[in-house]
Length: 115
Image (cartoon, rainbow, N blue to C red):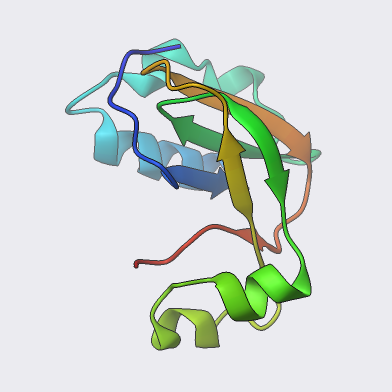
């Protein structure tokens, strides 16, 4: 875990080693994620990983209603998501840490694409 500010809805689904490396490169200037999470131990064949910033996850969920009605992403971003499931997260009390969760592989899960 690393210390960071709490940003609600600040989470990223990662399905490949390349995506993980690209994403950590983008934020490594501020925090050195790649040294904390050993990428060689992550199994991208079996799992989807979720980076969550600021607070542990209390509950993650999606439904057709959340995907098509509650997602506040711009229309151009939602248009690409017809085969995607927009995931909503309820958080525990903010801790200021970064969390990495591992779930069964599901490339259809997505978060918000803008507000």
